Amino acid sequence: MHAARSRGRNTRQLVHEVLRSRIVGLELAPGSAVSENDLAAELGVSRTPVRESLILLADEGLVDIYPQMGTFISRIRERDVASAQFIREALECAALRDAVGKATARDVAELRVLLTAQEEADAQSDMAGFFQLDEQFHQRLMAVSGHASAWPVVSQAKAQLDRARRLSLPLTQQMSLLIGQHREVVDLLEDGDLDRADGALRSHLRLVFSDVEKIRAKHPELFSDQDAPLRPRRESPRRAAARED
Image 1 (tube, one colour):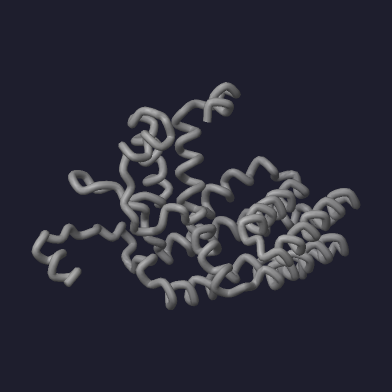
Image 2 (cartoon, one colour; image 1 turned 90 degrees about the vertical axis):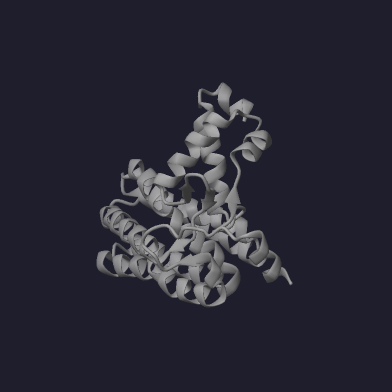
């Protein structure tokens, strides 16, 4: 964190990035409690940037803060997933439509390099590597259209999607399917087929909805049906002891 601070990024930004990455990467599981003191000690910072970062994460729907009770990693709410998907599809598909007819041979070649790297990650069962390459692919695809500056909006919106997708991949084992869909989009982009390229990308992005159903069936404890944050309950010592027995 010290090297990054020297490049002009403040402590709160760094703490926010670290915590957000851990939440999206499921190192901090949905429903789990977090401690400002523990995080501050671990990251070597004061409680202030940790507290400020948690407030920002609460604004993003990734953290639920309950006065007098504590702070918890939010459970996945399907309505949030749907809203994030709406934003992502609207921006990425609009960008793709601008990219068709504008993509150069170099643009297509760079996208195909990423596809090859994704295939290598699949062969090695490297899910973490694949997620990073998937991110680079979609970011590069948006850049081809000339709308690279819109990517941070997509990235922030899709945090809920990314949590669901990271849960789904080990369960569905579909890296090869996703790579095939990526390849289809690139092929249609190269051919200049606007309508089919748009349809292929929309189908690809909407795959998350069927994935969420599968994840929820296997891990219902990670989801919340409520639009509002699901308030955790405190147990009395007697009830907790009885449950453990």
